Length: 96
Image 1: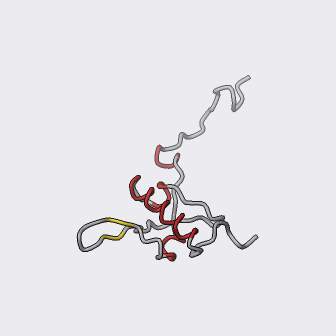
Image 2 (image 1 turned 135 degrees about the vertical axis):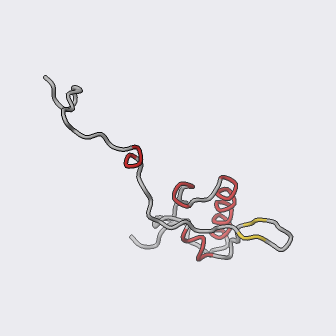
């Protein structure tokens, strides 16, 4: 039997490679700042920016969603942990 699971796709059109991957409509957020001496850092006191990098449940968003590189993602994670420890951000979402 040539059903949908047996390779008899018939005239079903193939997906393009671009359509195969999920697109994220969330705008990219610039998470890092630079000092006058040229050091790049993420400020843990800037909770408005950090909230954009955290999901509704309080989890860190992935690099794919935020658009930051690996080094910046590690700095964002450390900044969020510091902000949570200093009670600037909640560990989990307050809304149920």
